Length: 310
Image (cartoon, rainbow, N blue to C red; front, side, top):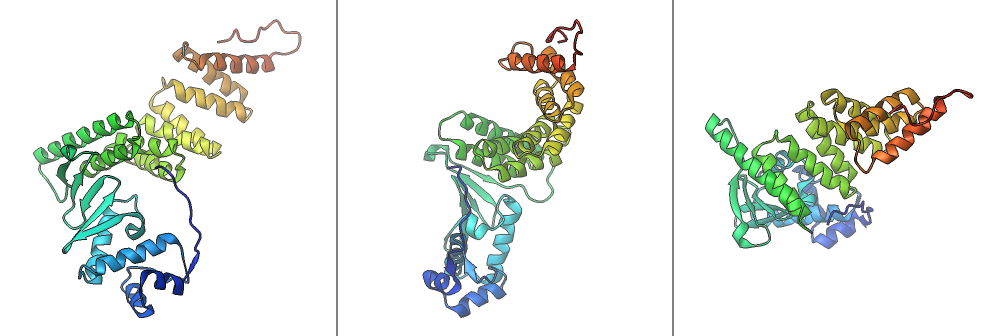
């Protein structure tokens, strides 16, 4: 489920350690090793992190090795700030796996195993690492495109958004420059009202490819949603600089200029939108807004007629 919420720090240190079955001495060892931060109060997510540490320790892994695994996870999955509490870590013997949705990754080797609902759909992949030849890079690019298209297909299937996100994550693991996957992940989070994650992926897309109009437009939408008019306008205009025929960007820019009282600029973008997209279901609204602005600029007694300057 695409739900997110903050959890209050409802547990004292003593309560948290007692719930996990840790002594104060053991907790301090974890803190000295840098695996956890010393806290006076704990949220539920902190308890999850503590429990994960205990489970990993039961695999006879030394703290240094656990720290290396966690650092590798943070590098591979920059979406997770704290793998201990945000990712599900499991192990078989001395092998540690991380599970995120339907995605399973070997934490040490970097191998991925994806199971889309049935066992027949599972496929083993390996994350790219080190310098590779042109042929191998091309193979990984094709694999990335395959998983990207799989994500697009899954977005159209009911109750498959989490699986779509998994497919996009694999696409990005194979090709970290695949901007379209970043944009689509951002849009899924945006639609789910997870605006912080949406902003993260839209920003990643803009940084990866500043010349991608859709990335600039979507980041503008996010800023607009958050009431950041100046930032929204900046990204909409960036999208228009890259693609002057981007009708939706003209529409949104017209709305922003109209809301800030910049009537002539708003009229220009309304006219441009109507020229580029004269038959969409937004056309009538655009015509009405342009007519209102035109009427507001006509001096009393003039012979002008609202709505003619389209």
